[in-house]
Image (cartoon, rainbow, N blue to C red; front, top):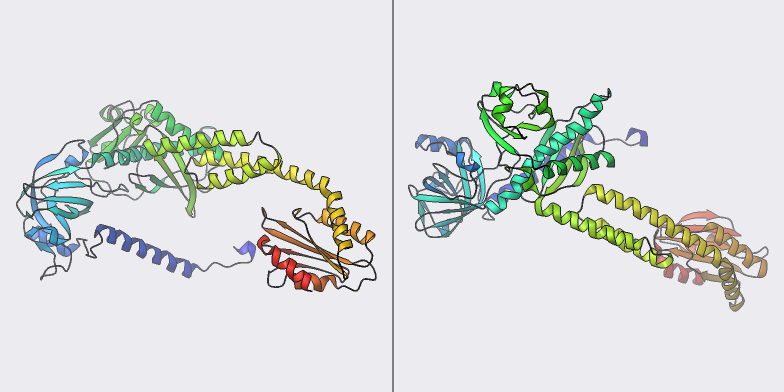
Length: 533
């Protein structure tokens, strides 16, 4: 900013960031409330109430179980929102459709509560007479709150219920989470480990700064001081896909914290406090107990090993495919990669292949057909949700085709110079008065315009000419006026009058002037103003 003579409003920036955070939190709470407007958060008042009533901590160990209904759960507390009861705490003995958004606390659950960057599970909780659709699951202290709406019946504290998780939704979440671990490994290996092995260690290591994993994508934030090059992104994407193709097993194991910390390849989030014992997830052919038996073996450096409490695949092959959609900077020294897996990744690959075929077909065209194709392909590419690696390569190809188009246009215009000169002179001969307004769209070509002007004034000695040419691709309009010696026309004033109100820029003298307008759509009005001068 200083180099460009600008200052940074740091206070304004911080205020705006705080405003965005508050808006984001409001949106999150509104989503959790299911549109009811209720405050469904449990704070110290609510958790203290539960403890005072002897409600036990929720056993959520079944969240790692797949494709099974968890029966025999007991309703321990029912919550309808802060301030929704006389005492303000929000707990009731029973719920029904009239309760609107509700919260259920069970003695045990198979639902995954939002944690560690991974989104929550959804599904249903059923009793003998009631069904509750679960739309959000949150952890508050040692209690898991299932937020949802009663679909039918009445549910009461003490009821026996069953938990049915939407595992079809969880599958892509697990896929995205497992591949987040693989991405973390790939980034470190390609950006840091390999250069370091070549005696060129980067000044900054690659460390996780945050993540968001849901059913549609994964967003991974990490420390790095520069935009990744197309080559680096391609290598990262290729390594992640390679781990999928190699069908690497995914193992999880709960180990003593001190033992787990000894694993040579272990990755953990800086500043994060981990429980003891801690859950370890390894994307490796070796089981974690084998790794723990010889934690310093350099072999483990080839694989991802992390502390993690999330839900994962059992083998990388279940991810199917991996595609990086975007890479961007979000703060000083922090980058963000967004990627997809499974069906979303396969769709992105298909779209990229289809576009590549269109690009190949378009590249065989010439002249006006190629110009039209390049315009369509550029618009289509901008809207495509595909690999950022592929998109960058396609943009390079299109840039090459655009150069080809521009070369053709220049050649075409050069060949048309004599035609334009002849038409300008014919227009001069057919026009009464001492001013000729001549529009011919030959792009923004000063040399051509000057040649036409010179040919006109050489042939027609008693009239001034204004040349007007629009370039719709560049969205610019060129206006040039020239008068032969002895013709009393102020070209500078004429150009200014014709482009008045357009924001045109330029200048000149009485016998020769030029203006450039950054809006080709005003061409017709400029012509009319020029004629009225």
